[in-house]
Image (cartoon, rainbow, N blue to C red; front, side, top):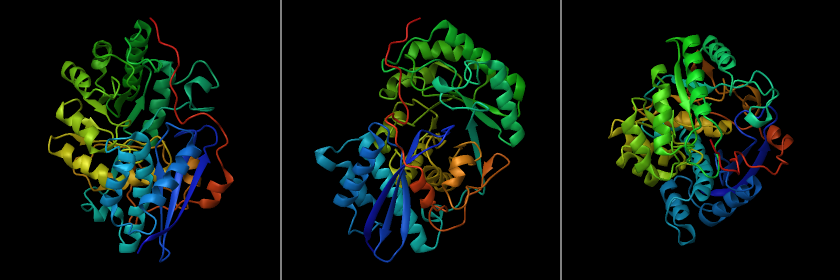
Length: 404
């Protein structure tokens, strides 16, 4: 068996754009007609350029080769251009290709991928969702109303309670102020106050029916993160996510030592080499690899195994399309140290339309598919009908420093 054909799509995500502005998919087809789908969570360049980079990497290192040899593919991509270091752009491309390879491997074996990477540990997977506005764009700067779930404690509490009624027992929100290209910064008093009030309102609304996941995106210095942590500790969050920028885990470790809230990190990290530094520095007790960036399925399974030796849990990150979601499900199902899975709401909306069969979600849990491979099939007609035509990136940061 060898990979014979490569096709990519950059799919525009219609409003409200839950999960991102666009999704980058790849399809690999072998000489015996088996196909596999992958997805990149790589957002540093225009997505069409990223798609071309995926095609280039495939032409150099995968076409004409056996898709089973994923470690050889990893070494080729990791070392491409005399780099041999974690490269978030290349690893996004590699991750997409590797996920597609595993889809092929599973289909060829007639088994779900999780059966091939350790077997099924979990029958169901606990999931959480972000709190989103009831209508309009999910992007804070583009919401219909200046008063919304991102900045109003009462609306956040209503949204959290609605999620609990759906079946979720964990919700995430990020009220701690904007993130800028100059982060980390010291939080403003207003941001600390809003964060505490949001946590209080949500905790009072859901009681002990749901965990609070406090999301930040590396906005703060260690000192600033510690100040914020003290303000929200009374509301017992399950985690404090990425409190400082991801480039210095030794600084994140200062925060972890200073708060009773478990620190979580990982969505902006790639490969076991970057996650290894987090573990070595005891910077987090929960890792959040995103399989569309972290290195695909096998690399993320290796990260989880490393974490397990330090009693660290994993909570796969997903703010992208349903193929990364499906890959995360395969990994989580096989991991003894799995904690919780990021779900894009209940996998409905455009995520459902992108698949021929919806990811199964019931009572707050994802039900792993028993179908071979990833257990999902991309609806290529929907991909073709929704090309991305914009010029913004998946996620962007404010360009001005944030002053008190």
